[in-house]
Image (tube, one colour):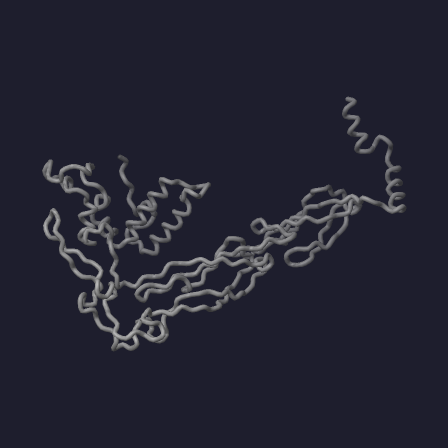
Length: 377
């Protein structure tokens, strides 16, 4: 069996890393190696990253790992069905699953580490999609977006009580939010902790609830918030609104609300990164002789010189007429594809002019005549 890598090494963080650093490293790696990522997806690496995060982000499991290493979560002796009292004593070998033993001390034998129920916890992040016009993405815009959010009750300030005198310390757990329970095991009596059944882990009881929030400590609000759409944002990019996500627990802060930007396609302009493509029609005479035309860009009309002898499908570049980069502000380019049109009907005067043009060349100088000569070689 291959030796397991160090969990800190897997996530690329040091042993003193904060939970935010661990979470940030995990998100970056999980996105890169997720099996759905066609370019860099790696199922084995993704599972390894997930396992490392599950251990290091949980305070109790991380403490056990720092003390015992991988042994804290592996089957001792490599034989799950072995008699725990055979073969003598060798380190932790012969005593079943060391992870279960350690977890029994932390969690009362439930197999999962439990955080302090009274500890404030941040709410989860949420995502909302916003559809905007193509030109608003190019030039930027401030828009108002309706949202629904849970906010701390302004009357009770999150306590859930009508007044401070209505809040009492739970008599069963003494305000801890958990009670001590003793269980018998192979090793004798083991003390564990469970959520207090009287207060539900809050550590307090409320006699009279707040009349505005009915004891919840928060109110559900519908409101409009201003969202700044920066110039140059592209389809699929996100804007964050701090504190407007899912509500926190036990007085913890709300999570963040992410707005994913969906840009409506334009009828004529086509965006590729910071470059813009546009196809324009051009009379064949202008293509032959060359001309100057005022071409639409995302910033208004700009003059483009069409060189004489331009060909159908030819691409011309308008430097600096593309989208300004979201960070550097440097604009991309606009690329013009020429769609040269041949008239389907001509006036008498136009026909006469074209006939004179044809007469100026020799009989064997036409394109088709040159093509036919290739077959006579």
